[in-house]
Structure formats: structure tokens, C-alpha cells
Length: 233
Image (cartoon, rainbow, N blue to C red; front, side):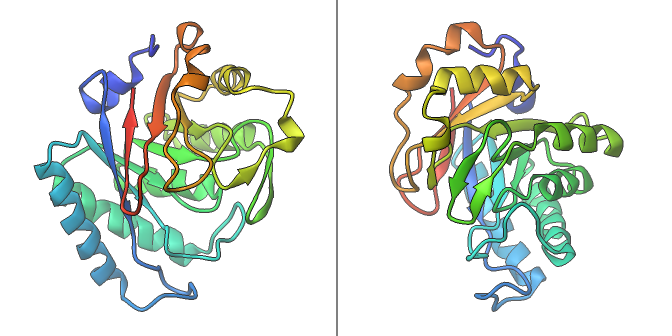
């Protein structure tokens, strides 16, 4: 249940379909081949396809920057993502989100603020988990203080809980519902539930027990393959 009406406020509908745009490899990453202008135009074209198909929002993500850095990226990545964000917003006219892998949440927030995006998708917001990149720890306190310092309170934070591609043995005694409550307590505006890996769709049932108690929006990562869409409900 989204008692605060976050999904309605951001997307104009109570249940939104969000298309994810996986940017080509950005400058200085191992697979980088294209210039920022070319990457931005490709992203803008994909955004136009999503808009024409009736999606309610889009999100840009630096998927092809593998292997990912942990929790921080260079200024070249933030600069490129901001340029891409501007072009995507201009092309589609849809609410825009930003995610920067892996767990570079402050950089994503800065990009969103710079390009006028409406939300960020963040990982490691509450508790901790072990990801491909190593140990990812809670970023909520640092991130929300940074948001206030930037004057970017209009940028909503949608937080992954029990994130895919990760081991959660260190929080095995904390279930999905309790993790969602913790994210809400730490002021996330929405929580994202995914399957165990990309290509493994989310099962909405484990999160249902928390839904009646939560004021935050819930988003399901229903990713069958790349490129994928994330549906909120």
C-alpha cells in the first residue's frame, strides 16, 4: 500500500510501468567504445520507444560498465549520466530515474538533481549484503544528508531490499517485510523487490505481508531479460 501516494505523485497513476534504459559502456570503463553524444542519442531513442508504448516513466542505468566499482564512480561517469539524463528527458517527456552501479547512490542523486530526474534507485540503503563487488553497507544516513545539502528533496529515493545478485546470509534473521519496514523508517519513499538475478522475475508474494503496514510505494523488478521493465504496484 502506498499511503503517501508517492507513485501517483511521481508518475500520475497509482500503478506505473517503468522502462529501464541500459546505457552503453561509459567513458573509461573496460567496454567503452562510443562517445557520450552517441550513447545519449541511443538512450534517447530507446526512451522514445518506451513513451510510444505507453510507459509511465524511464530509468537510466550504467549496466554495461562491468566490472562495477563499489559505492563510488569517477566524475566522468556522473558527467556522462547527467548528459544522458537531459537527452532522455527531452526525448520522452516522462518522469526519469537514475541508478549508478554498483551502489554509487550519492553519485546517482547528484546526477538526478543536475538533470531534473524525479527519483533514484539505490542499493544498500538499509542493512548490509555481500554483492559481486564485495560488502555493501547501509547508505541511508549519508545519502539523505547529502540530499538535504544539495537541496534535492524533490528527488525520491526508491531502495532495493534483499537485492538481486547478492548473498543475504548476514541478515538471514531479518525477513523481507522487516527490511521494508526498516527502509520506510529510514525515510525511503519506495522499496524495490526483485528476483535473485536479472532474468529471474520477482515473486510479489513474500512482500505482501508488509504492504498493509507500509506508507511507501512498492516496486517489482519484473526483468525477463535485457532490456527490461520494472513495474510498480
